[in-house]
Image (tube, rainbow, N blue to C red):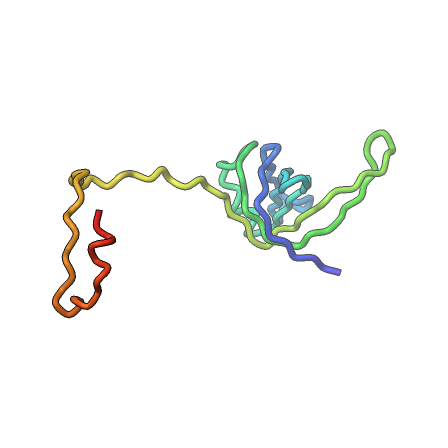
Length: 133
């Protein structure tokens, strides 16, 4: 079974970039969390080159879409561990929105304009006076 997932992951370590053992395929990998789940992220080839621009580090967020799987391994102490692994098919950094600037506009006065009386076509509306302040 294949699970396709899309999530925003906060990096818990700086990502690594290297060439595969044969020296021809770029590999980008990182470790982060999405909600309460720890996830190992890996990207290959062109995507690895695109997202390895040296600007991502610990604490940065990245939006990732890819194939999710459960990975098991044995740690140095011989204990079997498991975790989520996401092979990225699309990834891009999440940047915080730029602060909004206030447009320079003339200040409005606090005095409100007087209410406009109804036109002759609406003279049959007899509750007008009740709504005036």
